[in-house]
Every structure is written in C-alpha cells, then in structure tokens.
Length: 405
Length: 85
Image (cartoon, rainbow over all chains, first blue to last red):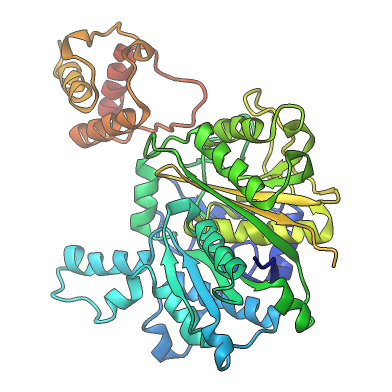
C-alpha cells in the first residue's frame, strides 16, 4: 500500500479567499461571523453567518462559464485553482487519467434552486433558466473542477451532509493508497447562504442567535458559513520523485453510522469512527496531540463529542490533548466543513501551532476537555485527527501525521 | 377550556406519542417525555395555527417552560401581542 501525503492546499472561505489569509485568521481565532449582507435578511430571525465578502465572480470566470456555475461550484473551482498551483501538479496525458477528483457537498446548487422556485411560485413565470439542472446538480462542482484542470480519472460527488467532504477526502485517500490513482484532487464546498436554506435551518431551531461558541457555556447553537476547500493528495513516492513540498501525511480514515436518530448525535458512533481512524493509521491515542473537533456549538453536539473523545481516546489521555473547533471562526460550511478543517489540521501540524476555539466565554461543566479558548498555543503536533459528524448519524474522521522526511 | 388550550393539546397529541388525556395544564413537560424533534414540530404547528413566532432555541440550556400550562400561557401572550391594539 502507498503512503499518502498532502502536497497542495486551497481554500475559499469567509475567513480568507486564499490559504495565507485564511490560516492567519483561523490561527489567531479571529471569528468572521457577522451580519449577513449577500441575501436579504429582513424576513429571517437568524441574520448572522460567515459569508465570503468582496467576491466578484465575473472577475474570475468568463460570462459563458458563469452561466453554468452555481455559487457552490464557483467556490470549489476557486479553491481547486489554489490547491493545484500550490502543489505544482499538471494533468497532461496519463497523469490526468491517473488523478481522481472527489468533491463533497451537502446539498449542491442551493441558490439555483432558490431562484428557480422563486420564479415559478412567487413571480408566476412560465419557465426557468435552461441551465437550471446542470447548475444545481450535486456533482456540478466536481465536474467543473475536472473540466477546469483536465482531470480525467475517477470522479464523483459525495454527499453525507456535514461529513460530505471528509467522506470525499477519505475515499480519495483510499484510491491513492491502493494505487488506483497516483494523485487526487479532493475536498468539499457549500454555498449555504441562500434564503430558502437559511429558513430551513432556522426552522429546526439549532441556530445561534449571537455567535458560534463551541464547547463554551452559554452557547446558543451553530452558525452557517459558506466555503470550499480542496487538497491535493499524492503517493509519497511520486511526491518525493518530483521534489514536492509535503504539508503532512494523511495516514488514516474511519467511518461509522449511528443508526439511531436523524438529527441527534450518538457518542458511540462518533467514538467508533475515531477509533477506526486511529486503527487504520496504526496510531495509539497517546500519539495524538490535536483534535480538530466537529464542534458545531449546539448543546447536543458538543457534549456528545466530548463524551465520544473520552470513549475513543481514553480518560487520562483525552484531557492531555488540545481540542478546538474552527467553526467558531468561519461557521459551519456543512459539506465543505471537513475539507476546510483538514486544511487547518495540516497547517497546525506544519507550524506546530494549535488554533484556538474562538468566542469562548466560560467553561461548561459538561464539556470538560482542553478546548484552547481564544488564544493559539504553540505545541508540536505529532499526529492529529479531524472529526466530521453529520445529520443522519454518518461519521467520518481523518488521521494526519507530521511528515519529517 | 379556552380554544387556545384545546388547540395546543390537539397539536401536542398529534405530533408526539403523548395520549390526549394526559395533557393537562399542570402536566410537566419532562414527565411527558416528548422527543426533541417532536418539540420542534409542535412549535412549528403552533406558529402556523396562530400565526405567531415562538422564539424557541433547542440549545437553550435553561428550559423556560416547566408545564404544559406554561406553554399555553406563552402562546396566548404571543397571540395577544400580535393583535392590533
């Protein structure tokens, strides 16, 4: 089996439209959650989120392209451009055919759906735009990334709500590890700031009214944040042969299903995914220095995840590691969240810095681990895990190890 | 029994597994063991029925309502506030 390394990173998020700005914002714990401006919030009770500001799609895409690109595809393509340039990979000839492209998303083209329904039901128009279907389909982002760069190997979209991109990256990791492909361009995207989507999230009554403060006492729930992230995975052999810069080694992947409840999380399921990732990576709990938590900021997730961490890593070990939630900074990107958080995890390992949990005000007795409140912390990270737990009880965990050559 | 009270009982009985006869003003919500998703559905049905907005958040760590009567009073208050003076 091949060892798999991360050689390219790309993000397009409210916390930064490229990796350097994004990482500085996340590392310093500067939350970008605030009043929404890209949609009309006058009819919403929840008016906050993390949106990508000052993004003019026409500056980055040709008019002909734009007609086919829902915002979720735009974000994915933007992130993929950075990741591929960062890795310095090309896809000519056989290299294109031996590269996989797996992009996760929870829903797909939500703005396109919203606009189409508005035309039909509110405006009483007779038809919708002819590109409605190719814009909204869940695999549109994946297909546009392939077309943009000429990636011709295995390619598809992965959907598991808030775990989508972690499942996509895990699947891509398996393909590179097995030798099915030598390179994978993988990640996830979500453009969730659409009126219909916001209404849906509002209705399920888990949205924060003030801001997202994971694991903190007084937290009032989750906050949506749009965004995409893409990483380039390669076999260690190929990365070395072409002298690529290696951020970290992707070394394990664990998955599980709660089979319990469609919205409530189950500590047993979450713990099984973490244990599976450690076993796959041949890591012991003691080897883990950092956990990038799912950490949504809901009452249910944060308590359940804390219990699951204790179950998977063991009492006595769980207290010693650093746990933080990047959603406190850039909100919950749903199907894009796991990819954004893998980028955070890789950079934390590279720089030996644990990014904090922002907006943390007070310790919650039911969340009794070290959540690195508000301030980054220097710490050598030998290995880390990145957790994603989805509505529907579908859990996915990636294990990442420091690569020292 | 007011019509609001009767309507609230109807909604709770329809959306949860609780028997209509167990619904009384002094019944404690915790004793009725209504599941969290059912609570969300009940609140939505109440909002639709009375054309009000109930500012409920499932993350609130301190429960505002103890009994079914507390819920009925809160609904009545929201209806009264929504009426033109």
